[in-house]
Length: 281
Image 1 (cartoon, rainbow, N blue to C red):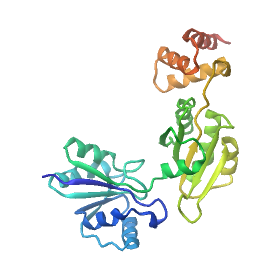
Image 2: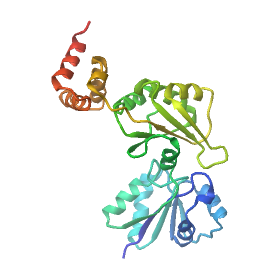
Image 3: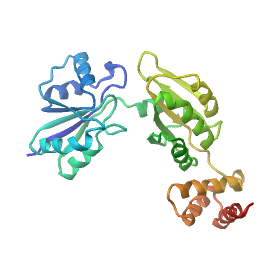
Image 4: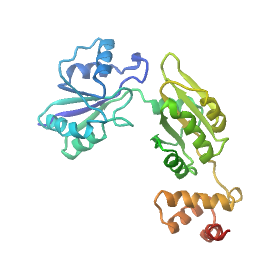
């Protein structure tokens, strides 16, 4: 009989937010795979848990190499608990490879639900929460980052991002360029911790605020694009949207059709705008 892979959510700040089941799973696990074994030690001490299982490190640098070892332990009947530094494993953290490998071997995968920076930031942002998408971390290189943002400039769902504090001002400035300076957003810093802060405003104003220096764990929530109307989109904007899709890998014909559908315009009108821009001196 095969074992069970348990994905355990851990506190994103306040240890009191740890779900009750987490302590029981930590105590019962035969193998604990932790993103940072030192943080795991501090967590178990705070929860008053004595672990008896084997503890191994499982982080970005060794995830590929260690996954087969953990899968073999699962195949042999072990209960393997996966924890990351904060939040739910596999959500912008190690875990996806192990889950995929376990599923492929028909090994049971379950979870201990816990705190999530994505949902916490979304809930306190004050922005629409009925539809949203999580974009994780943006590329570090400026050109790639701006290109990625332009891909979703017309996305109507609320967008959620993670970012490092030393790149926050550059990222917000790039968002202001791609989405518009007045697009509403919320920068959520140090959620559930002592110095928790939620800064709300337009992207341009938030970029200016961040330029003064910001510390801590950062989650950015950005309002989705407004519902477009044919009268709202200039020829230049139509061309920009087509180019963004082409840069993302779409063929021009497909990009034109998609932009036309988004804008509620005939494909011919978008096509003509693209041709005119191409022939412009």
